[in-house]
Amino acid sequence: MLEFDVIEHFKTFEKNLRTSDDDVKTISERVKVITKIINKAYWNINSEVSHSILVGSYGRGTAIHLSDIDLLVELPENQKDRFGKYSGNGQSALLQDLKSKLLKHYSNSIIKGDGQIVSIEFSDGIRFEVLPAFKISGTDKYEYPNANDGGSWEETDPKLEQYKLTDQNKQYNYAVKKFCRMLRAWNDANDVGLHGIAIDSLSYKFFETWDESKTGYIYFDQMSRDFFRYVIKFIENNNILLSLDGSYSIEVDTAIKRKAESALRNCEAAIVFCRDNQKSEEYWSKVFGKNFPKLLSGKNFQTDRVSISNRSTREPIGTATDTEQFADEMGWDIAIEKIIEIQSSLEINGFRKGSISHKFRIPIKPNSKIIFSVKDIPGIYWYWKVRNVGAIANSRNAIRGQIVKRTYKIVEPINFKGNHYVEVYGVHQGRVKIYGKIDVPLEDFL
Image 1 (tube, rainbow, N blue to C red):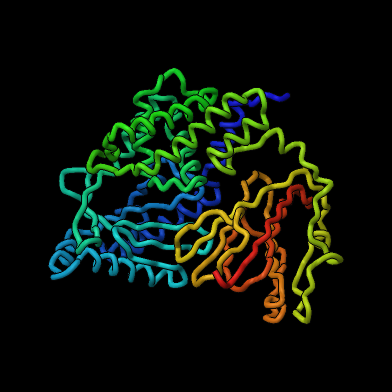
Image 2 (cartoon, helix red, strand yellow; image 1 turned 180 degrees about the vertical axis):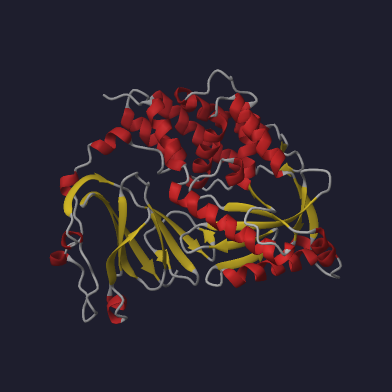
């Protein structure tokens, strides 16, 4: 019986959560564009770097590949005076003014002003939340608008948040930010509902109790178990969680205790079964979700049973134009070495509704879409095939099925019902070495 390798599993897990190099580049370019829009509109300069700071999870270095990108943009003081003179909710008016500036450039993106931010939904699944703010003279703090409850001004100190977490991260041999990213995976996989700042603040408090000598990957199983014990006691004792900058308290809902208790039970079971790799992996996957690796069991996958779509066995297309392509007709060698799991996330009106993998029927609603992704692998080029199946697809002459080169992620709108499917091919030097498939059952009555 194979033993569970704590170091290799948690090391791979942490790597799986990182933002890909392609996304980092895309985010960096978009930050420059947004910054330039703000500077031109409000400061009358063309700078791509002045008056903006990456904040939130991404700014603190604790984001994972599904995290939103928070960008604070500093506005001149005269804009605060301008909107402060409004008889009613000048904060909301400020957000709408900022939204109008961004819409001029991003006319094809979904842009909304809500609460404290203006959000931008890009077609590749990356979401920016732009926070307009005013520098408080003589400090590193900022005031920002809160359009809720009639409007008010709030304070934040993002540089202090970043400094405190970075300082603790160095103190604990760079384990803190890695662990924060893992906790985000737990939060997402189990619909816990904690905001990023709550996760980072809880982690910060937890590490104040943790042994500085136990920071290597070999301790991440115990660290996970003890964190959930800490959270349970924290909630039972009605402790107050302060934000990292200490400017406000964060509510930790008592319902989260049940989520932490479930995670603790699975952590304890995973550690008990450390001599049984497969069982231990199963329990850790219950805690952290699909990004937790199955290293050894994955090597034993029966690739000879893989069935890639082909022309002779395809779904009927009726009288529709035949636009479908097949991997064995692309001039590639089919030499599959690995089956990869396609991860999926349903979005309706800009809000994530979770994975579709356990849904038997997916609702068709306005402004809904599905984000499909795989773990990015260096040296692999990703090709995707989206095939619309069924009578409606055929009657609309919209079976699709073309094989197109993309990154490790694609975004697809939801249009009409049918048992559609998505395939991905990982190609290296003209050979299909990696393959994945996911069924997408769409219904129009939910």
